Image (cartoon, rainbow, N blue to C red; front, side, top):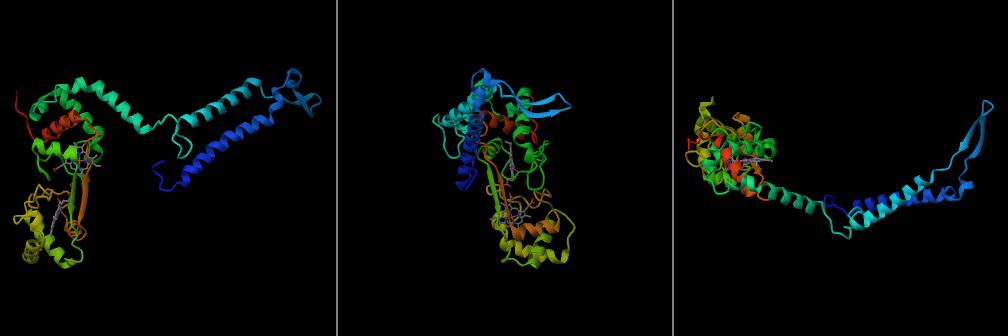
Length: 305
Ligand code: HEC
Ligand code: HEC
């Protein structure tokens, strides 16, 4: 029930569940004459007759049917006492689906541990050379990473390409491992209100010129000036970025968001706020290690052993 911000829905669910059971019991109670002795169980006529001899009978509900419904009501009450189901009431067994998932995961981890054991202390480049490990890595990537980075790991606007050898945070095995384990949060502040639209456009011309893209040359000079004032703290005087901050290199014609004048102006004025979710607690350390090797391999060729 934690998805709901008000307690009202908890009570609503509880009332609906209880009403269902009470209604069912009431229905059985009103039909109780069918539980009686054999004569009472005989069908009676409703008095409707068609075509001379076609009679409509009022057939009693079979006894087994009534008993089955009673048992189902008993089961429902028992279930709602033991397990969570009545709104906010957690049940006497203290069961939660989150614990259950945790248990299943632990069992799964225990079952697959032997498979991962040989990679635990293997250097990442060696894992990248191991065919079996790379098959596992591919599957782990498709299941856990492809929804953002693409099934070919080539990314999409806002989601970095992991195959081009160009890194926001760094491409050493240690850095990739840290990125995957702890996640990353890249923040570029919004300059709206500090930099006017005209200056932002000049800066965008300057930034594009660094990658050799077509620009309005008359504006590059003033753009460079403003870049020196506002941008070098993170992107560096040479605009080659800072991996400690995740500030991208702006001179290599590799773009996280796109290279158009408009996109760069939007980045400057509105800023950017982007996260890579931490996988610690989602994947095991051994799985993260194999993924690190798989990602590393996308832009490195491991030598022969
Ligand atoms: C919810 C989307 C999402 C998922 C899922 C995701 N990532 Fe990311 N990842 C991102 C974003 C966004 C960034 C860029 C963060 C930034 O701009 O600061 C990123 C950055 C990275 C980087 C750093 C790239 C660089 O240039 O330094 C690596 C490595 C990476 N992800 C690997 C993975 C792996 C491996 C997985 C699967 C376990 C994964 N990611 C799952 C969104 C995601
Ligand atoms: C506080 C540090 C900081 C400052 C100051 C800063 N940036 Fe950034 N910038 C970043 C970070 C971090 C990112 C990456 C954001 C992300 O991961 O989504 C970024 C991203 C960008 C991008 C997107 C690059 C791409 O590949 O699509 C551009 C363009 C950019 N900055 C230009 C500028 C300009 C121009 C200025 C000066 C007006 C500036 N930045 C000032 C930190 C900064």
